[in-house]
Image 1 (cartoon, one colour):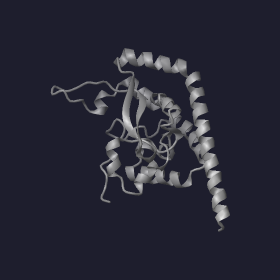
Image 2 (cartoon, helix red, strand yellow):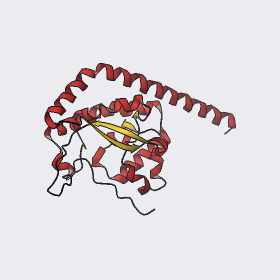
Image 3 (tube, helix red, strand yellow):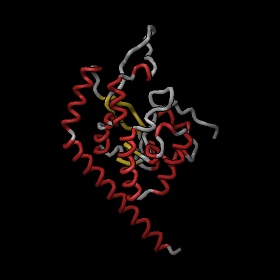
Image 4 (tube, one colour):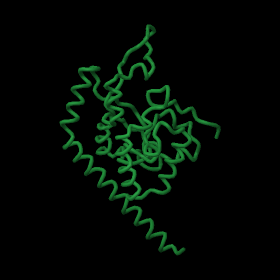
Length: 215
């Protein structure tokens, strides 16, 4: 294959990534404007159910491992045991919080993450910072692109999948990304939210901690 073909393919992919970035910013801004009444209602409901803070903020690794502040609507209380330690996630998850998770409404603050250029609508989900040194070299490639509100692993099973299965799907997405694939994942996400499949792993509020593996 000639170098001209490689150059053309590279320019096409770069052009498509620019389109993706522009669409992300435009749709996120529009969604924040249109959904502002819904966001306000959820914020008020969280205040009466759990008090402050309304939004859960946590450092997460993004593209190339860059750390950013990740936002979600709060779904758990701050209840602690007699020693002052936080109770298990599943004990602190409220019924209203479960509703927010099942409907994915807890993800709405991530529209701000997209406007800040931390995230995209589609990409591997941003996980915990402490996982960074637990990945194999192959698994770490999930950070070659921006993390997303939804992704291939989410539409293929979400938390019903093992960590290894999720990471294989994340890396496959990195290697096979296209605008068409993003549109397909967004379309499938709507059905997954309606079906409410794979929201949590059995016995956990979300999923078991990733412990890593021998490299």
